[in-house]
Image (cartoon, each protein chain N blue to C red):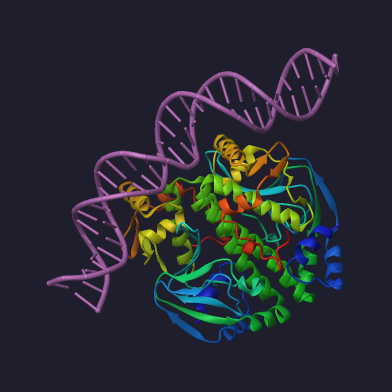
Length: 239
Length: 239
DNA sequence: CGTTATATTGAAGTGCGTCAAAAAGTGTGG
DNA sequence: CCACACTTTTTGACGCACTTCAATATAACG
């Protein structure tokens, strides 16, 4: 159940058997959600955190004019809101993009971990800091990269993150989200997203299809994106 | 020395005397830096974190074309790189914007805190999560807000954050950074930043001068920015 | 009081947005 | 297996927010 979480953590630091056991016992209930279901609403009081077991989720904020910014994408093995353990409520919504399964981690048990397992505590803390590192890279994308480079960068990031948990192929990965949602990650309109994807295709770099990304030229993508995986803090880069 | 840090933390949660003492003893050396000095370079191994005591710093990433994105601004009372405690090295540079004083917190002592003071550990963890929350709000700004709204939002945020540590006036605050640096926070060029500030002035909302921000109409600024301070996680909103 | 950094303005260019419509894909029930 | 409704993708024409380049004005500073 927590295999993908372990893959993710062990790509960054050692996790002892005792710690793995603690993580296993951390998850109580498992729940399923359909695609496009709001799992956590901004502001509600929380006493548990969610571990994504399967599928893809996102976190987003929106403005009154209806424009929405996705601030993070999450894949299997990611905690969706580990930060809610210290924040108690979220400043954003959390929504499923595909059908998903999540494991529920009660804050009471997390608290126990902070009292008894300092190294594991630091690992969990690390994991929220990793989220922040990805936020920073997205800030760089949103503020300074062109839309095409931004798209290329997101594909590189997802490819690597999915690879860490065993969900990527050398030449691509499954991505069951539509162009509107991709556009909301990149701070552009769906129409422009479509043109950007067309350009990536015509450049011979990648094809983003219905529910799949096919990478034709990974090095070219990385070059266009100026992709530097340092911010993902992997011990040794996979792939 | 850690008074501003205590103000910041106590605006969010209770800090016991014992915890305050632990924080006090956390800071060993104090160092000073001139304006525009790179304090931490991306990638270097770190065994200490820095607490900003005075002045303003920023964290940034840049692209090969020279464009730079500031991903966070820091004021007195902020840890600049508490996240380096779990990350060991940073994915970005840290630079002073004004002359600054920083307190040095060795990771060894932080580690001791995680072994002995779980509540304080959670508070420090919270503090890095607060940074992430600000990153998310900036992602929203960069991706979806117009440049004017983005500027208005930054002014609202700084006004509130400075107020928490006693550095704001009802009608403004000191801000000793130039328009180029402001522009690097907002993902626009310095030329456009200048036009945006002109518009804020002409709208009667705020005047950003040399080293000072004068707020003429805080409510108007907040309305334009759609400023919702929830993401700053204050127990009760000051001001 | 000259020298350098910073702010300001103008004119022209471009990346992305907006509006609108058509094409292609997907799912459901008959 | 088709028919129909709905979602998603694709394309075109036009407009605007922001960029770029370049010059001037103003402030900061030794």
